[in-house]
Length: 291
Image 1 (tube, helix red, strand yellow):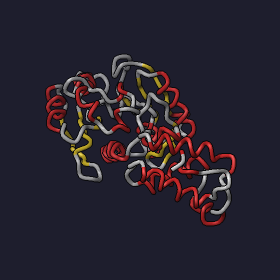
Image 2: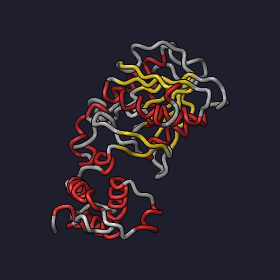
Image 3: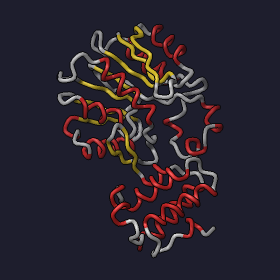
Image 4: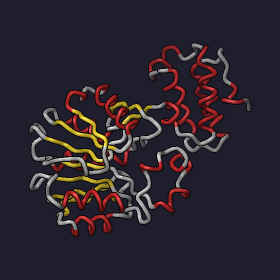
C-alpha cells in the first residue's frame, strides 16, 4: 500500500475515509474505521452532513496533509496529537506537547465536583492543580455561571494553552492561570479544589501503551517511585487548612488501583473521605475529600 493509504487529490471524501480505514487497519491500529473518521474529518473540517450531501467531492489540495497524518497515526501517534485538539465535556480544547490528551475518564472528576457542590449558582472560587489544557477548570466554569477559577501548572506552554481554551470556550473572563508547583504560591480559601495529578509509578511508564508512553508529557504522568508523590503534596497542603473552606470539597483523579493508598494519605493529612467515584467502565477514578 502506498504511503497514506494511496490518497490523491482526486479521491472523494467518502473514498478517502475507506482508504484511510484500510490503511490504519493494515498497520494494526485498533478500531481503525473510527480512528480514520476522526482523523480525516478533523483534518478536512467536515461534519457528518458534509459526507451525506457532498461525499464525492475530491479532497483536493488537502491530500498530502491527510496522507502524512495517516502515516503518523500508523506509526502510533494519537489522533488528538496529530489534530492538535480534542473534545472534553462536549467542549473543544487545543493541545500542546506539554498537555495530556483529555480523556473521558477525567470527566468523572467534573461529575464528582459538581455533585459535591450544594449550589451551582453560588459565587464560587475554584482551584485546579496541574491544569494542563485547562479541561477540568473550563468544564466546571461552563457549568457554574458565577464561579471564577485559577489553573495552576509548572509548564508555561500548558498555561498558554489553558488560557487559549478558556477564552475559546467563553470562560476567559472567569479563568486565571498561574505558574507554580502544586499549592506553593497560593492563598485560599477556595470553595472547590480539583486535580488530575501525575499518578503513574515511574517504573511503569515504559510499559504503557505507546500512544501514552511516547507521546504524553512525562511530567504529567510520572508520580514518583510509587505513583503517589503528587497526592502527598496536594493532600498535605489541603490538610494544613489554608486552601479549602471548611467543609468544601477537593476532588482528585486516581489510578484504578490507588483508592486505598490515596485515601490513607488524605486521612493522615487530616482530611475526611466523602466519596469514591467510578468511571463508566466501573473503575475507581476519583476521590472527594473535605477538611
